[in-house]
Image 1 (spheres, protein in one colour):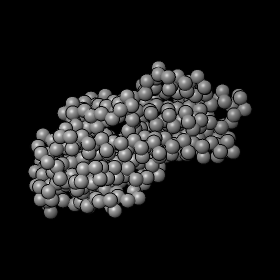
Image 2 (image 1 turned 90 degrees about the vertical axis):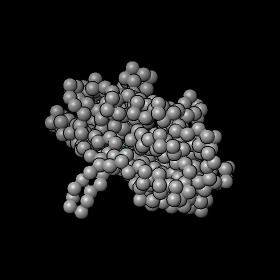
Image 3 (image 1 turned 30 degrees about the vertical axis):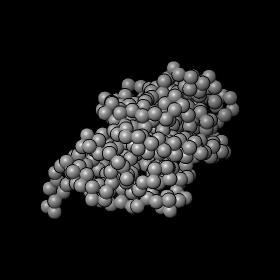
Image 4 (image 1 turned 45 degrees about the horizontal axis):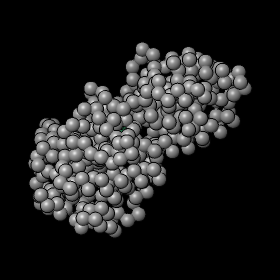
Length: 374
Ligand code: F6P
C-alpha cells in the first residue's frame, strides 16, 4: 500500500520527549519521504471526533525541547470500548473504532504512528487488525518496559528528581530535619533508585524491597551518631511496608490501567514522625514536577531516533510493529507479541521491568551506606 499521509497521536500520561518524537516523525515524513502528516488531538478521542492539526515544518518548529505534547493526550479513550452517555445520563460502552477509520479515510490518512503505554498500544494493535498500517512507540517516565532498554522521558524525570533532592538537602541540613521525598514510578523503583543515588539520598524505599520503618529509623540514628542530624528519605510511590499492601491513591474507571498510586510519602512521614519524636519530619511529593520541564539532551536524542525509526518502519511496509531500543540499536517487535504481555507495561498479570534487589545498582547504593529499610 502506498502511504501518502500519516496521522500521529499521543495517548496515556505525558512525559518529556514526546515533542521530540512528534518533531522527528513530521520531519522524517516530509523531508525523507515527501509525505504529509497530521496530528490527532487528545489521543484516540481526536480520531473519534476528527479533531486534528496539520503538522508541517512550521507547526513543529521550536517544539523539540519542550516538555509535554503539543497534541495533548488522554488516557481514557479506548475506542474499542468507548463510554457514551446520552442526555438522560444513561451510560453504555460501545466499539466505535469504525468511526475513527471512517474519519481517517475522509482525511486521506493512510497510516498511524501511536505513542503510548500498554493501553494505547493495545488499541494500536486492534487498529492494525482492522487493516490500518500502524506503528507504535513506547513511552513512560517509569522505565519499566522490558521491550526497550530505555524510554524517553525517564532521563528528564531523573534530572528533575536529582535537582529537587539537591534543593531539599540544603533545607534539611539547615533545620536538622528528616525530609521524606516521594517520587513516581508505579511498581518499579527505577526513578527512586537512580534519582536517589544521584541526589545523595540516605534511605530509598522501592517496590522491589519491602521495608520496615524500624530499619529506616536505624539508618537515621546511625547518621545522628556521626553528627549528621538530617536525613533524606526517598519513597517510591509503589513501595510496600513489610507484609503491607501498596498505597492506592484512586481508581480511575475508563482508563486502561485503573489503579493510580501516590501519597505514600505522607503516610511514611506520619509514621516516621511517631517513631522519632526528637526529629522534625517533613514531606515533599515531587508528583507532576517529574513529568514536565525542558527535555534533557538524552531524551531529545532518544526521542528523535524513535520517531525516525517509526516512520522508516512504516514506509518499509512493516505494519503493526512497535519500535524499541535494545542493546544499543533501534529495532522493532510485532504489536501482537508485545501488548498485553507485560513487555510494554504493567498488566494485570504484571511483567514489567523492575529493579533487581541483588543487582549492581542496588548493591552500589548499599555499598555507600544508603539504606533500603530491609
Ligand atoms: O506511568 C507514568 C506515571 O507518571 C506514573 O509514574 C504515575 O504513577 C502515573 O503516571 C500518574 O498517572 P496520572 O497522570 O493519571 O495521575
